[in-house]
Length: 485
Image (cartoon, rainbow, N blue to C red; front, side, top):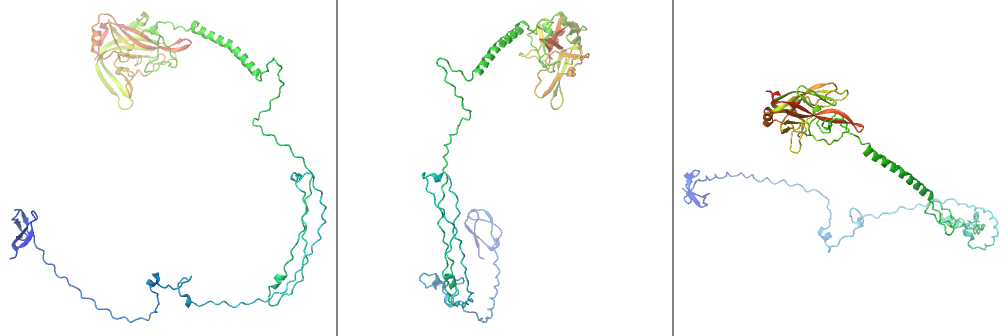
């Protein structure tokens, strides 16, 4: 039994196994790793070799033409003798080509003898005698010479014709050449009358304005009159005419400013507050006035009223109805999306019955700006006064937040609709949702005053109608305050 030797795939050393262990797991005696002994491949079967094909039978030699081709090496060699080549296309030997022969020239029959009759020339007209040259040698340059007809050619008589030889049919053309015509010398030009030369043209003027008239020199001691004297005179007259007009207009302006100054309309200043700020438009916002009025001043008796009584100011009539304490809710209408409602804590609510007493005005009596939320830098005029404490504003901030079209307390949903002439509607004014306000109102011992800003229509001021508002006062006691759920 012969052992089969092969290298270990782990350690690379050779190892041998018997034929009975080929293809089985064995352990390498060197690295002690287990491996599978390779199986020797069986010998390849012998490949059958095809016998060589028999040789083809001999082909009889054909009778081909024999070409004598020059050796290419001799033609390409610079030492070989190259045959002289011509301009032929196929490069054949010029010595073997046949020499072309010209056909015999056939002489044409002789033409008949031509007869030539020379033209008879008319006698030339007599040449007029030339005039004597002018004294001025340059006179001929000023005028064109007179036209003279050219002289007719005079023919010279032809020599006698020489008979041509019979053998040369072209001999007559040399002997019978046409005679050469001779011309008489042209007459000299007849000088014309001398024309006087024109004066040289004046240079063109760049200034196309008409030439100024030459004025006589002014007398010594007197200044020359100015060309634009009339224009200066008109300017002076207009200047002195405008001075009195300017003085008159200045006097009228001063008189209208200090003497005829407009007076404020009659009424208490707190009933004539300019209406220039709000969410809803005033009766007419085109023209507004400005009056310096302290908004925290005392209210006169005609602008105060208790519950169940009325206050009339301008085109509005206000009647306080009730004062209650309840929870507040603020509604916000965004530009896009659903309406959102925010529920707040308790606050004080004042209910008013407002009537429009005008005949042709539509306006919003109350505005969110009149009772906006209070900030340290912005205090609205509507305020609840309890003793020495003042609680201004309500729960809604104005101007509204970004992307918010409108915000209001749930009981003020219809305030965005204007009040027409003769119409009446209930409006609500609320305090801020703060427990300190509710406790102060419920525990008050003296009369409380709610200062409310309302629109009152238009008043005439300095010849124009101006929208204004008014501050009214609602007086009530702690016993008048009710509790609502």
